[in-house]
Image (cartoon, rainbow, N blue to C red):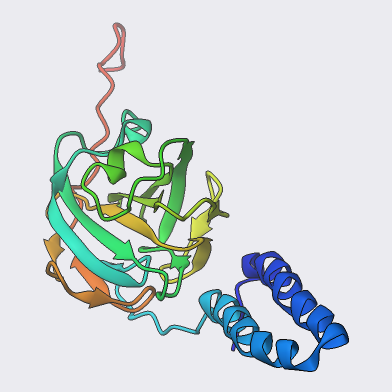
Length: 240
């Protein structure tokens, strides 16, 4: 089983906090060590299991939006991009939005939803409200990303911290070329992910549906309007 590299420091701390008490108890009184051993192994096993990073098979298709996170869809609605992603050429106004809630039992490794180029990565400090609350998307700590695919379609997505998620990891860089399904980070413990889709997209999931990062198709994007370059006005004295 592959373990996310970001998980090893946490696993090491948990191992020290669980194994050392058992070892100390074994030196003093064997029955006490036997009592402590089972819960200690359970906690350590859970820490290793939490940071599991299974392989995923991403379905092909330039128009497909793939889930960036494991979890449950808790909202399908319309909303504007977060303030930190506006004013960069992306569509303005309300866009289709999909919100995913991750509990502590879900795989927390996040994956890129579409192939394209990263335009902006923005970290915003905030609160640590329960990730399932409506206002958590606006008030909680988050890392938001704006990207554009090869067909000129804009897409935004965000990792949002929850009540016990105190560490957002995002390895994406502005200007980076990425592929759909590629790993890009994780959020430790319960958390939330949101996506803002380009105009013309058709959502393929519903509220309450369980989804899998890197595999579940969340939506199909419509074709972007062709970019038409403005013609330069003729200058005086131009050849006739």
